[in-house]
Length: 458
Image 1: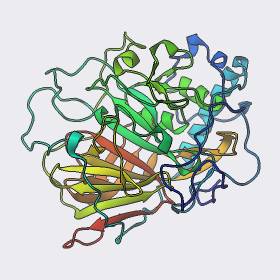
Image 2: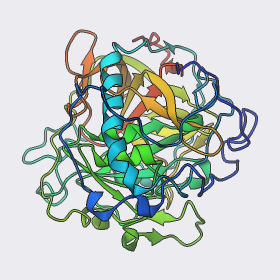
Image 3: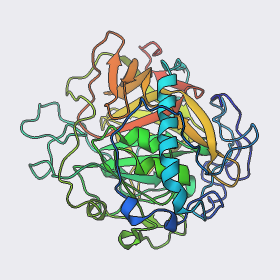
Image 4: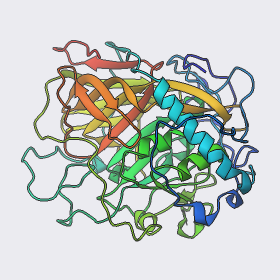
């Protein structure tokens, strides 16, 4: 289904006139979800080498819930209105005996999509975005990053010196964190090395927060997995993934991917329930307990990005606006005093639990081609979002108060994503945390240039 299909309206996500912090919580149990019994313990860390050239001949299709009809689940042309399918759950699904037959077909389906998609479509970047300066809550906003070149070992996913003097001998840990308004403020994401902001059904987004050098005591609230998680995480040297359930086809994909998959419905002993939180927004873990699921893995990931303390040449901008939907009407605003980009939703500062606005030195805006289906993601008719994370497409990198445009490229799922400027050079990031915004090509990305600058363009 093309990515310009208008989503079906539901009562689950507020419409354009509603507050970004309102809405009915997502349902926890639907008929499209798998049960804990559907995922055997022996399968949790199953992995096979990535292979993007598999044939689909003689492969039996999965028996997961198929999509019917023509509507539902698409991001609607960048409009900041309501959207479909903002709920999902973890109720009964197909039995475990069907899982192995599903896996081969699903991996082949992803492979075919990788081969079909060519270059990414153009990123709509214009001037005249929101000029509202978001108030800065300074409690947890870091100061400017030093411009002195670091000596000694560096954290592979941030380019910063590790706090203990040595890079921790552990893999990347990815945790699926909810970003629905009722899930905010989240815990632990301010200590992630990389945060991937991924579109899911109904135009809402969800985080894949990746940790390696820092170890927060509380991460969450944790929710279910999506198909795009495999494409995001395969480039991180077989990371650990922690989530709560998912639909059967997605669970099969993850178990056959280049990662170690852990479902908290089976590994519930590490769950922490936070007082004052109600289901499904009450599931948390510590980073240490996440790494404890795979104690024998002592190999840090390979670096994903290049880092440099030298500021790049680009167009000076004060903000970038990404209107996924009303619930995720994203604005990043440059704060020169801290040397960071500050996140807000619909004009309200996005904070972490304990206070302090979310802030990062790097924002990578990766525009991707998106299709929808073939599976229903929830009982409201929301279709699984399939973001194409291989191939190439338009790119914008925000750091040091400037926007650098270019192209992202990735040949295969287990290859790193490269960030290339229009002159062919590699775009280096500021040492520190990075937020990657995965933006469907139908969502217009708008920058507000400084008074002396021209609008950026891809």
